[in-house]
Image (cartoon, rainbow, N blue to C red):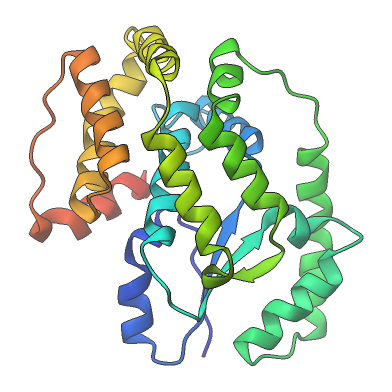
Length: 253
């Protein structure tokens, strides 16, 4: 049996998934940071997207990237793979990449599956080729040393076991912790720009509550707490018993 879920926060619970599905395989998809920012912003602005909160903008996407790197750096499970999104969709690599994914799952793609992938990937490539601008805030974040490290990590993977890039994941975490005062100033300026964004503020507390409940990566928690302070907010404490229902509520809309 095989099933998938494209919930961008599945990585919070992948260890539980592996415990429940003995012999299972988990694929964690990594994507160019600017593409992630664009995707989150586009969905946040789309009034017809009932599954996406308007406040889930690029800044929260940035924190998700930080969170994911820390989660991956903390574990050495051989059946967890990082997948380069571009490798999976680009015409020159997608056929081999798709075959490799199916082989790792112990499956053989059916003709209907290949036809569906062919159509959907064409649509994906069309989206990726759109020319999109960058905000000054996005440029500032992408120029930090830890985000440059993320770009280097992405360049070094196609469909790669997490254990093979553990050093690079740890480097990401180390760079974030050692960023200079200039980065903190950039971060503070970005948060202050979001202070008047009502959808963002309405989404912020419930989003970061879940981050804090699922794991405790000090560099990420420092950024979350700093944002709380700048926004003048004190998020409510979310008990683990309510975590599952909170996940469902957030992605149900």
